[in-house]
Image 1 (cartoon, helix red, strand yellow):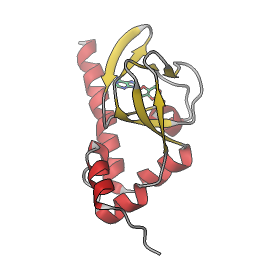
Image 2 (cartoon, protein in one colour):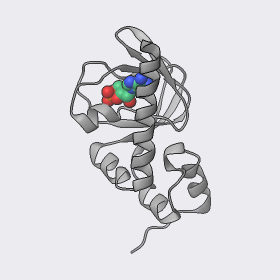
Image 3 (spheres, rainbow, N blue to C red):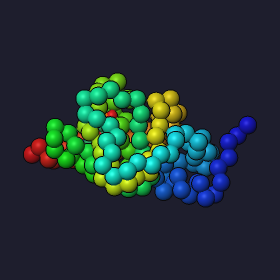
Length: 141
Ligand code: CMP
């Protein structure tokens, strides 16, 4: 049977840049993946050098990304983190901490895999990772 998604949920999901280009059918497949959690300001969500199996999409609030003791980025609604360790099976490349109270969508590896089967989402995530690389290169110059 085909999955369905309500109009309100479709609009909510489409507000996330990585889901923006998905069709209604693809959004219906994405809906239901992941678990929404709330975290308090100051909580460490992933720790540099540690193994990790979960990836996250920011629903609300702001996270700070710290690598080698230096703040390298801030992530807000619709942005994602924690995908690198899951995709590469390497340790976490940075520590990510909640800068404010946050709502997050947590994806287990299998759920990330399902979401990435949607071409529009893989493209958006890949493009987001490339943007991070370009930004880091700029910071090195
Ligand atoms: P991961 O290595 O699993 O855990 C730390 C996360 O921080 C990493 O995945 C990325 O999602 C995120 N991250 C690493 N480097 C950057 C960066 N330069 N800009 C934004 N986010 C980053």
